[in-house]
Image 1 (tube, helix red, strand yellow):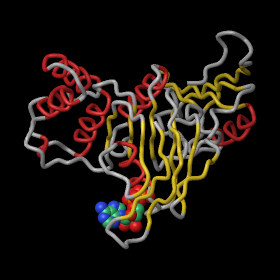
Image 2 (cartoon, helix red, strand yellow):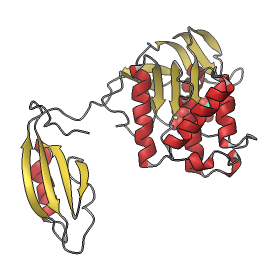
Image 3 (tube, helix red, strand yellow):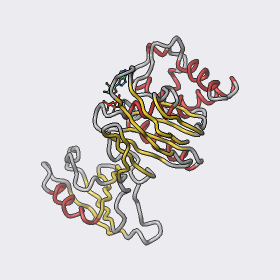
Length: 286
Ligand SMILES: Nc1ncnc2c1ncn2[C@@H]1O[C@H](COP(=O)(O)OP(=O)(O)OP(=O)(O)O)[C@@H](O)[C@H]1O
């Protein structure tokens, strides 16, 4: 899909929110869009999704597109599954296939029990799950996500991360805005910043740094305790009975050990193991 000289302003004579945008969305890529509040990110995403039209220029070669907006239109007179079935049909599925896909995505997001709940009665988190399920159920060629992770629980955020990676691996394009600068770090093919009506290329956050890592097994203090907040190096955590296994880049391991040993009450260090990512099976990065 290509944007050719695209501009958008609201109302004749209004200021240009976007201007002279020439931009290609290649197949099989994940594009991250960033920018200050009010810079025009949502405007750009609505144009990409085809639910708004440019005031100038044109957009060509749009694949079948799904869009998850920042705010869910809760006033629609549907149940959750009724709406997903309806949207599935718009995405080109037959009625039975649309209903099955809708039910399947609701189940995956742990919202299967709300299939028959009217949209207007869903909690904010469940509404967001339904909105995201709508974006995924038709396996679109272009998926546009405007802060789609906001309001989802941790498991659902991870599920959406995986679903995005799957869409890209299947050859689709995904364009997203998210306030978390590390969202899908390492997976985004390119990043763009919206500023003063223009799009400029910016670096995307890299994946977890490669290199040696350290695994620390620490036993909780008697009576149990929470881990200290803001652990150095943002370690990967696995729960063990009465203990935790933390894996972190070697550069942060000393600071992490210090943080555990000086916590109140302190944690008991059971084992420290150096991991070499070049050794097969030894790289525990999540
Ligand atoms: N429907 C509309 N009518 C009039 N002006 C609008 C409309 N939608 C957006 N705007 C204006 O366009 C500009 C860009 O808004 P947009 O929502 O695209 O920015 P954004 O970068 O997504 O902002 P945020 O990060 O706050 O969500 C703002 O000045 C906004 O007030």
